[in-house]
Image (cartoon, rainbow, N blue to C red):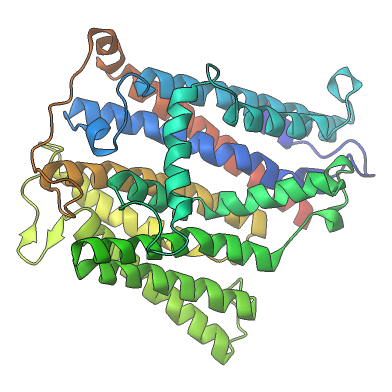
Length: 424
């Protein structure tokens, strides 16, 4: 609330760094922190729902129950990161608006400190900052990275499949991370306000955007080689259409829909539509198994909540439209700027991915559709006595949902406000 209140005021000084440009150019830096926080909030809600319906996500995702964060751990981590992020953003925004910096520290200290602390926490040594939980994620990344060509590395497990799919939703974050590193490494971040210094590496942005999709193509090919399941080639086609849209966008530098249409732009837009519809149909029919040739799936894990599956099908389509903007770096929604577009599209895509994760794991638990495990039965999800308080009643979900809503509102309102000030 304080942050929203501060952003309503015009900068006290006209000269940079106490100017609107200083606010605009650090948005990618804060998005690097915001997007993972948003996903962790979503993860805490997912864990609550899986545990509530007895879905053994630990076994499906090959997680160790002793090191998994659980509801309380995930929500606590997200809440801590949210507090530091909002505090840093508030101090930076207040300094730009009023011309007074807390403790007389330079402006660049606030976003840079937040970025460095978060980065160091991610690479902290054993025994610090949930090392064993981070180890699961980084081990999975290492296995995925081995598969530069489909023949390399071990066979694809569900956990590698899932993490690689999540990475396709984090391409906006990957590009922001690159820009943030270059922004400070080149020294531009130490002189905020000069928007001409803010990096826009169009070529590398498209390359980085395409890397997660390339690895998913390799995983699909490897799955086909190991299982001879022809549907893996159909799944591979989904990622190839996405890569095609990314490549065409890179060649023609197509970023927005306007009145100027060339042959290349029409091809790009057509491929974008095909890719979006392709991904959506695959989501609801194959990843969730909800819509089949015989009708709607009857064997559902969220017992008594069939309405949610229908709701998810509708919202997933809306989310896939937002996803189309994430695979087009520097895309612009008509009437909005690039930073506003990227923040909104990235937020929608992460929320869509969280919803997708809920039903993807549920379907894998119920039916073993892709034969990632040799047996259909899954062990019962055990709830230890220390976890009972986390699950009953919905305290964790209510806290997670409330804080998630606050974070989303604060970031989006601040972004739109900065953009409107700059235009005026």
